[in-house]
Length: 101
Image (tube, rainbow, N blue to C red; front, side, top):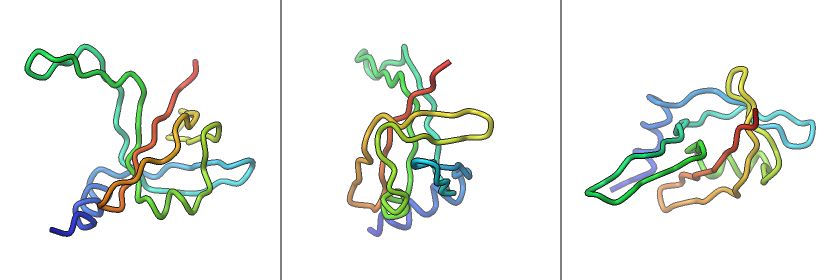
């Protein structure tokens, strides 16, 4: 199975335009936003993700040069990138963010 096609479908249907800013250089990117959730459980096991995450094309993310401490803008909200991209076999990268009040 070509999981790259699955990633492309996710980004085509659930993706949204964001701006990743590295230093003072903005980079437009399409990502799927994963909202934080707490208090969920799966078969009695707590499943919490208190920080928002984004799913992106790994090559596109790496091309931005983004690293922890850089920012991602989603509409009027600005998030700090707190993790390096975690790639998988499909060409996707998962990145954890934090929104400061």
